[in-house]
Length: 357
Image (cartoon, rainbow, N blue to C red; front, side):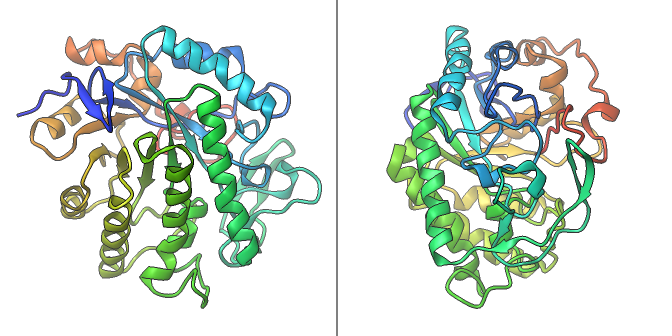
């Protein structure tokens, strides 16, 4: 039986415990050119006692931005700003990975530089609205990525990963979940292509696999994690065929396993059986964000490390309310109570934290 407070080696990187600070979209990159700020350095360094911090979503390219004031890793200025954050975390003894998040069709032209438009595997608009500096706006029909644009996008991920290492990050997590670009390629309702990038399971998983391979080649598989959320309907994703979901993600995880990545990070759906299957399929460290909705992930989730369901557990809202969360978990409290009205508001208002994004 493994203790959640025991050290763990993740692809050669020692981590002090098995408690992960989950990536949470924050929209606080108020520096010029979507750069990190001193406040962000304070925020992450306060939480450096986590075995692993995964940052908020960071766009790998200008067109990958889907929300106001989210940070990037595609310019020298952004690299320099993130260096102050990683230095602050490392001074406190922490380990921090940058989450690379291309939002794809989730966004709006008003959030992008002139001449750019949201992109996706197919020209299918998401239902709903996104918050912009001008207020909520309907999602637009995205531009379909052609083969050349797909190749450029994959290269953008690899370049951003190199920038992350230059900025002092210990590694990167590729965001393949929650209805963003990689998930849009995986899901049949958002990927209606009939070429080699769509159609059957092999076509729909190809983009995510090629992104992972390019990033692993750029910085090493030992510095690369990958996040999935099978069946998650967030951002108008429809993965409703249980057999297809199982086939898609079992095949994806099997293929990713051949890249010698550092970890797989799964946002759990309603089927714990699928969790167990993917945990068995994955050959390396398995990080789980367990299903606890509508409540935030709480102390009981540590039992999932003890019983072998996962190697590490990701906490979102509880980490926001308790910067010293590992110590509080070890002491069995007390805990500051997360405010659901703050963490789980309906629209993305640009000034709140979203624990499961």
